[in-house]
Image (cartoon, rainbow, N blue to C red; front, side):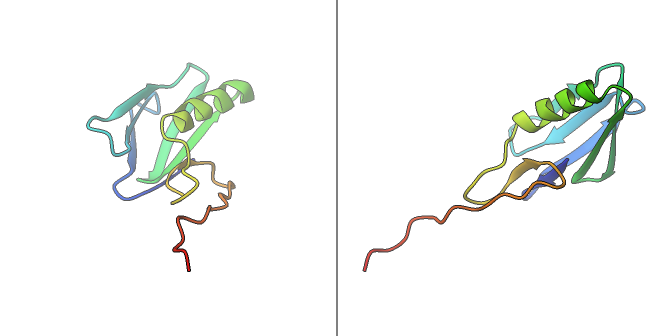
Length: 95
């Protein structure tokens, strides 16, 4: 997963069992990984979810992504690494 936005940061603790996200809310969002999933943060904006059970890894990644889904006007939010967001045009002035 990739965090796109000003001030969006992630950190993992307790050997990949806890994930803390700063997503612009007034508090940090905390996730506890299931027993079959490990979470690592290589950079403050890159999250790596690994595990043996593919379904649980995808379910956990979807849960993390659902707390701040990508926005179609600015492209900010939690995205998958290979995901591409086609940005919508904003309001245009009439002529």
